Amino acid sequence: EAGVAQSPRYKIIEKRQSVAFWCNPISGHATLYWYQQILGQGPKLLIQFQNNGVVDDSQLPKDRFSAERLKGVDSTLKIQPAKLEDSAVYLCASSLRPTGEVNNEQFFGPGTRLTVL
Amino acid sequence: KQEVTQIPAALSVPEGENLVLNCSFTDSAIYNLQWFRQDPGKGLTSLLLIQSSQREQTSGRLNASLDKSSGRSTLYIAASQPGDSATYLCAVYQAGTALIFGKGTTLSVSS
Image (cartoon, rainbow over all chains, first blue to last red; front, side, top):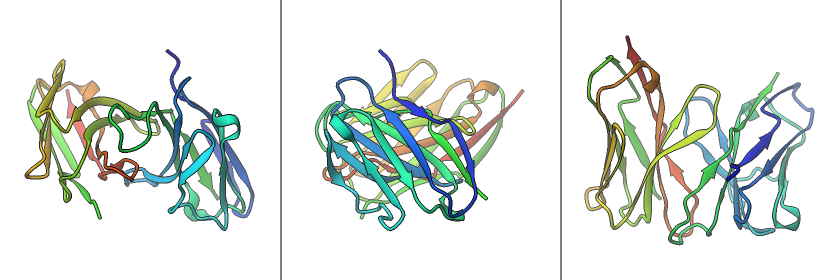
């Protein structure tokens, strides 16, 4: 079974530029998550999708971050404009079931390391 | 608000030692608890997932325990090897929220 795919693996940009990350979840997984992991910290949820609807985006900085999940499969996360403090690893995860349900184990992709100069 | 704490933040041991990593959480109303491994610059690799009805899970040299009532979990690594060097993250599943992570314990095993 193929795992969660993410691209690119690495990205370096200047502040105020824009950047986009792509995620392809495990086939059949209805729930998709984007996490931000700053160096030395645990991952923090940015947004959660159930199929193509947003379940939780309470910690997404909506003035600069946006995300979509068209057709309930692939997802993109965009930052525009980027700030220095956005330097982090962005992790995508998927689960068969929604948060809070039994058998909702999350599977993580390899992540995208973003450096903002 | 759930908080997950991992102690110690860093640990250095010689090869062959048995070791224990600790994870504590403030709200015992969790569904599952999961231990992950993260190599530098890489994503998360799931090690063990313990359901709330279970008290422990084992995989090879790893054993994870869960005591919901006291809000604690431990990850036991037997006969440590240099290849075990990584950051180990603990995370809890709760209703209505996504995974809540600790900051991790960075393990270094010297040969």
